[in-house]
Amino acid sequence: MLEACVFAVFVEFLALGSLALSGLGLGFLLAPELARTLALTVAGHGPLTFAAIAAVPVLSGVMVGLHALWGVSLELGARLSGADWRPARGLRFAFYSCGWDLLTSPAGLLFGCVSGGAAQAWRDTVSAARVPRVAMDAYLMHSRELSDARVVRVRRLVIVFTGVPILVGILAMMWLVVEAIARVV
Image (cartoon, helix red, strand yellow):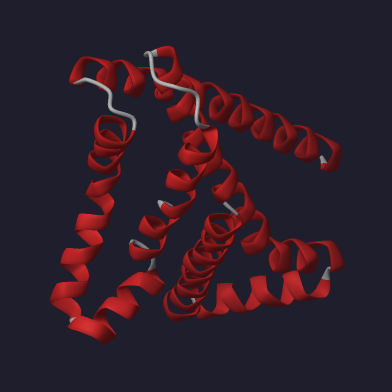
């Protein structure tokens, strides 16, 4: 289990780090003055500098946590559909699925271009974006030995089990942002 978790953290860090670097590069390319001003503002304020430096590791942890929530939700849905409770199996599946995030990131595109050319890299990225549902269904049918009808039920339960906490988290973050803005204004 530890290996799967380490893999998840590493690939999410690479994926989000490459996204951040690509965004910075694009910002400097498209709006150099604005990007320069923002960079100087962030660099000149300690809390903003800390937030900028911590953003990728924190978001990587959040993404791994969301994958873990998905894995536990898969197992809970499977359990409610008649399968045995095996949360470690669901977590391993979810942690290794973080590799799809790397494949669909700028780093994944770059690795793909280097190893197989731009056209192949693009095809791999499109495939990686489509594979999660297929892989989840295969996991539930073959690894958890659920029927097609039960797989559909688990899919619905997973949406609820992952969607509700994510929605609550988004609403909480929005509330915190509004509160922070209200204190400044």
